[in-house]
Image (cartoon, rainbow, N blue to C red):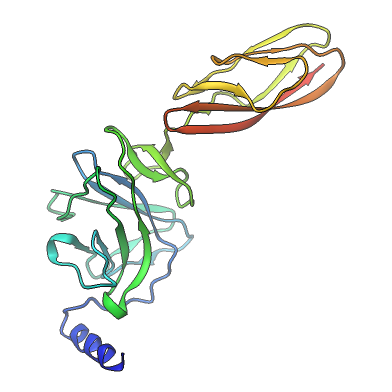
Length: 240
């Protein structure tokens, strides 16, 4: 192991391996678009500018061997990513020089880090699944831990393709009268009650009927599902 470390350091001195920065592991791969025109977005969720000089993005595991040029993007010396900001590299654009594509039918792991072999410092990685045309694969909130199908939003806040309730989720009804609320959602889905509640019905298209005899505030758990998954929320109904 000592001999390997000496060899790696010797190669690094000749520029065979990029020098290792003191790389904070809080920059993340944030969104990937590989429907025809490939781009990879990274995001800095911190409050500080971070130096990403000589960091690499690749579709080969640098812990095993330093990737060949056609599977590698290296950020130039002096590259930075500002606080709460995005950077995007693109396939087929000279100034970005992303040489490798991503096969959306295979589960290729994309790596972000510094160095290679025993000097490899992994910052982030993602293994995107196969998915449909017109979608990207991204964190459902920028820098968050949950991934899913997203609307392609290059250098902008990620937008999930999960359904989202329109409005605040808070409503007012009158006691001793039938109250009908027509719920709607973005990226239309199927509505359902999460459990049962006396005097409350909800149709699959979002028609919510409530009959209550006394003044109170009801908490009604609801789910909305589409082909990308299910969103759950709790409605607050004030019976006045």
